[in-house]
Length: 117
Picture 1 (cartoon, rainbow, N blue to C red):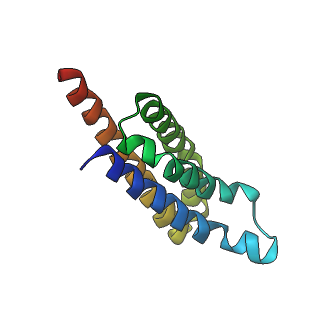
Picture 2: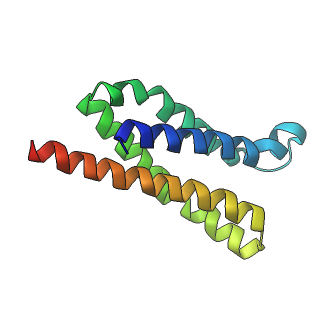
Picture 3: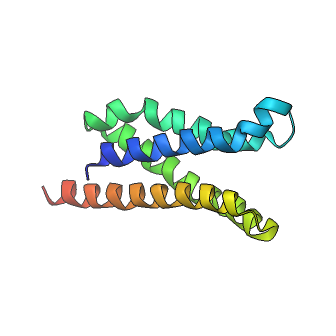
C-alpha cells in the first residue's frame, strides 16, 4: 500500500467514524465537542493528501506527525469506552486506532524505502 493510499484510508475512516461519534452532539447538543476532533483531523489529513501523492517531504512529515498525534490521542477515548463498557464506542475508536496504526506503519516503510534510494 502506498503512503497516500494509507492516508486516504485513515482520513476517510476518521471522517466517517468522527461523524458517527459526533452525531448525538450535532443533533441535540448533548455530548462533548471533543467528539468532533477525529472529523477535523480526518479533513486535515484528506486535504494534505495531494501533497503526499506528489511526494512533498514537508507535507509527508506533517501528515506523519498529525497521524501520530491522532494515534496517541485516541488512547484516552478508548480507555473511556472500556470504563463505560460502551461496545459501539470501543468498535469506533478501535477501528480509528487500527487505521491510524496501519498508516503509521506504511509511512515508516515508505520513509525507509525512500532512504534506501
